[in-house]
Length: 164
Image (cartoon, rainbow, N blue to C red; front, top):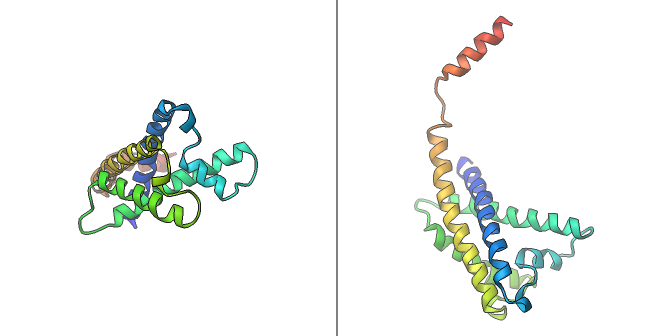
């Protein structure tokens, strides 16, 4: 369970890095290819409930939720996890050539403009690298700075509360 939680948290954090990359790369697209990126396009295909604000919220929740899910899966891959960048590319390929077109949400990546594919590939490389680094840090923290042991601060705090 700890592995899954660490992976989901690392996935959330990696999705933030990915989103920042997407936001900064998107304006560099040609005007005719500068329409909403896949997370929003997918939400539009599943018929969002509510107005524009609700659609933006649903997009954020779905985007970060999928990042957390994929991060949790990555953390549970044992005994040896793949390279984070390769995992990010595998998530991109599995999504944009696999389940997304299979469910009729978007056309396969081969039918999207090359510049948009490059943007999404770069975003997934960043996501994968951030995921692996974040997971490494979270697992390390869990086994060191967040592990059990005697806390002098907690002892003093409990003693002080008893006197009050």
